[in-house]
Amino acid sequence: MKIIKAVVGVLRDESGKLLIAKRQDHQFMAGFWELPGGKIEGDETTEQTIIRELNEELGIKVNALSLHQTMQYTYTDRMVELCIYNIDQYQNTPLGIEGQQIAWVSIQELHNYQLLPTMK
Picture 1 (tube, rainbow, N blue to C red):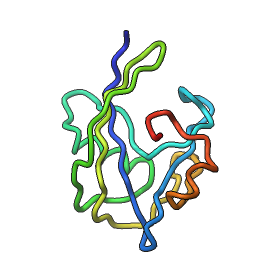
Picture 2: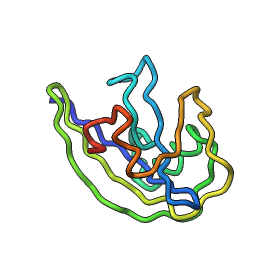
Picture 3: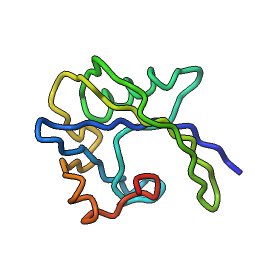
Picture 4: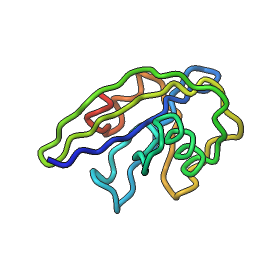
């Protein structure tokens, strides 16, 4: 079974809403919503990966982060090993730089979105 090592970031605005991003048509599970992040490349640490991914995807510079949780999720054809980081401080306004839709949502609003299984 294919193993994918990835990271995601939990970004909150001043009101406590979470930033989620919609997976694009060319991605696995296209159309589902997720926390922003991506796959670990080469010999990157998980911290280096989340900093790089959030800069590439959202145009933000992460100033402070903390590990929230690690988890594994098994799909029929792959297993994802996921590190989830709280993004405690960042610079710039997050934008969907790679063309992805983004949304700020409350915990109560999450049920209105088709979420990846790893977000449930």
